[in-house]
Image 1 (cartoon, rainbow, N blue to C red):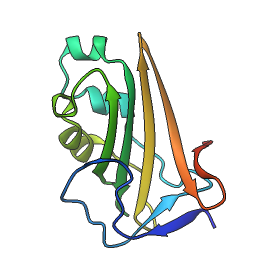
Image 2 (image 1 turned 45 degrees about the vertical axis):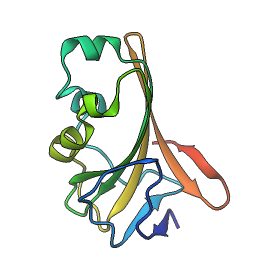
Image 3 (image 1 turned 90 degrees about the vertical axis):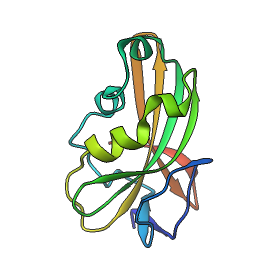
Image 4 (image 1 turned 45 degrees about the horizontal axis):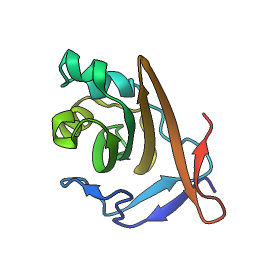
Length: 137
């Protein structure tokens, strides 16, 4: 089995509303949801050039992906030098981050590290055996 059943669970401390959390699975051993959109471009959608050039740190996102490939940002842990409300994450992700269609709703965890002109993206899985761990594509 490549996913765990989770019922209405926010992984990170900053929570957002308006997501359907009646039932979803979380990625555990492999990447289930494949993005169509580019994470970095979606996050930069509502940022001015100054913020894009100066952001540093790690941004961790929990995104619910529905069967039609639409995103809903559920929770965030922001360890960057820019306040969460200045990143406009909920709007950017919900409106612009698209995925290939799925046969079930999935919780995706993404960690994005910003440093200098570089960006590193990791997909995170959760399992009973391994806890939080990096998934390979």
